[in-house]
Length: 101
Image 1 (tube, rainbow, N blue to C red):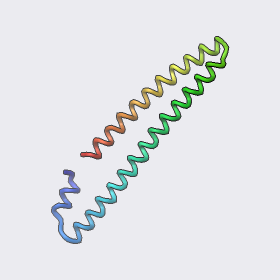
Image 2: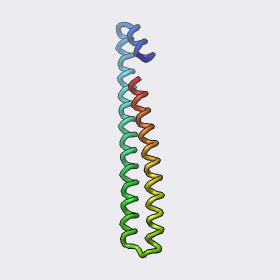
Image 3: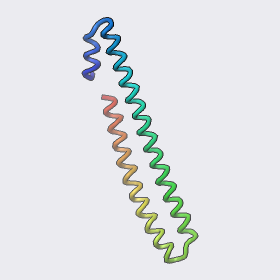
């Protein structure tokens, strides 16, 4: 049990109601922030996938030398995107674990 919850359990009457209101407000802010972070992670995933798809479409239409360059950019972009998504996923997991504690 966290410190604010322990403090709430020791208070009585009107003070307890005020403390509970503060806890509820903090919980609501935390949930809103988590939703915002989760949305940003999903946006980054979609943007990265769209960029990779665009590069792939360009590579399909390109001539041989340009095609090699585009394939290289696709591989670099895909690797960068994958690394970023993995880091964001780990960060998201830490946020969920911290919220559960």
